[in-house]
Length: 278
Image 1 (cartoon, rainbow, N blue to C red):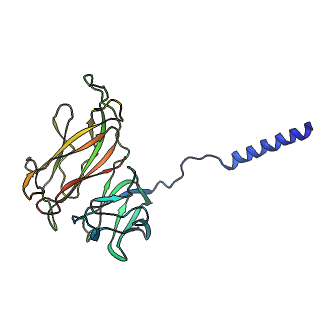
Image 2 (cartoon, helix red, strand yellow; image 1 turned 60 degrees about the horizontal axis):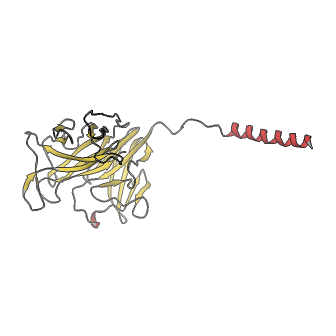
Image 3 (cartoon, rainbow, N blue to C red; image 1 turned 90 degrees about the vertical axis):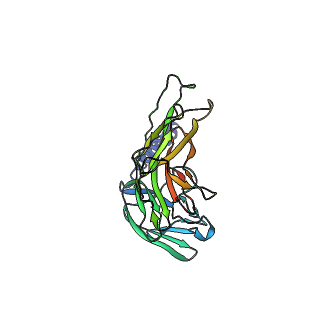
């Protein structure tokens, strides 16, 4: 009996060793030249069903659809759902094909590099704009001795200028995006002025934790200056030209993209669309 018992132990030990040898845990071996991307549709059109993109093919492969991972609507992007999702494709020349029903409405190619980037379609006759998403994202903290909860920290914003003056006419000036410090109320430049199709670097903003038992958030106000240093004038819902202003809730640790899109003087009116990188 003892011999059989030892034989059984030996057999189990042998199987365990064989298993460890066969299923050795190795580092991530995904090809280093993969490109990750978020795809955005910012053609300045009315957000209605006739302008929806029903399916998106990338290099001939279905990536997004009304029956799958998401219909692509104006001023939106894919992959949708949870914040910070990216598609993956082999880097190099990449073809994007959009369908409405069975009709091809967009068929353009661009170059994607290894790493994370944002692909922006703003004109169905032009190749997309490709922007570096600037990963890894900054995550350093700022502690203020006078803080109510001593939990001031940061998030990061990248601003992209996609403003049109009128149909077929991109805005000609350089825009300066600004945010207001939630404590001092000082207006602070977010990067440097950018022209149409350009983006700022990913910049850090301060988030003051206003609710103690929370993950940390507060209201952040934004405005835009034109090339003369004046607050940008835009058309409002009543057809009048007014100073541009907006606000978003900033959360500690998040990384966001702010796309300024639409028309400055006509409908559909301009606004910022926010999209999450993290």
